[in-house]
Length: 257
Image 1 (spheres, rainbow, N blue to C red):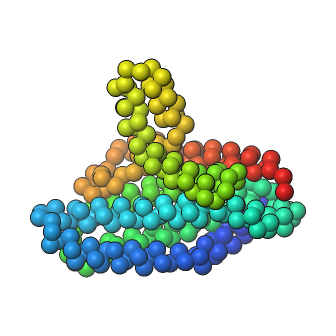
Image 2: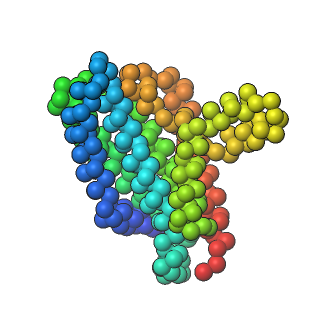
Image 3: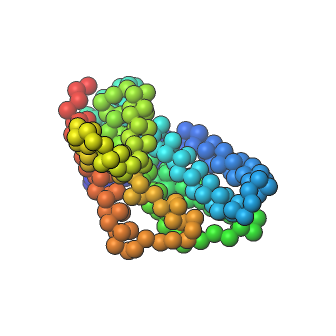
């Protein structure tokens, strides 16, 4: 059955990525939090607690993005370069199943990574008597997972037709521009050059608006968007991810090995 084949690919991908030194990221995050808890309260006055909460969320998001991009760009590309794809494709596994399975496997790794880092980070904050809005933070981490899942789809898309290094650079470029796409649009609006305005509008339409999935600032202050906005942003991230995976699969299906 298709579900069994996709599940097997996802499970194998999950085990492969977990073994690939991902746990070092958790150790680095824990060390970062211990150092921050020692230093920040001494150099900040009155706002140390909020800075620590913001640092925790920011570090989780950045480390998750690094894993999504560096590992994601190599998931399919590594199979192509090592020629192991020649062994997988002749079996009763479609290229779409391989793509979806790889995506689900890495997304599961990222879910575990975010959950563990969240428990460690905010557990340390609790042990040090620092209050934080748990509900808002948990919600921001859920939307971070949607963002990371979308980022994995971007990495897979670039990974199927470029080298790993170029795919990594392109993915990081989309990640950075995706967080500033609204600012890019505003920059075009204040420009008197129609060509610049048209270019920024096109970029805004093509690039994913990752700021729609970033509720870190709201979480720090315990603010929650409306249910309508939350649903709209979640659907945006999911639909965009499906679209990118579809495009990646179409490109991958046209490659000859």
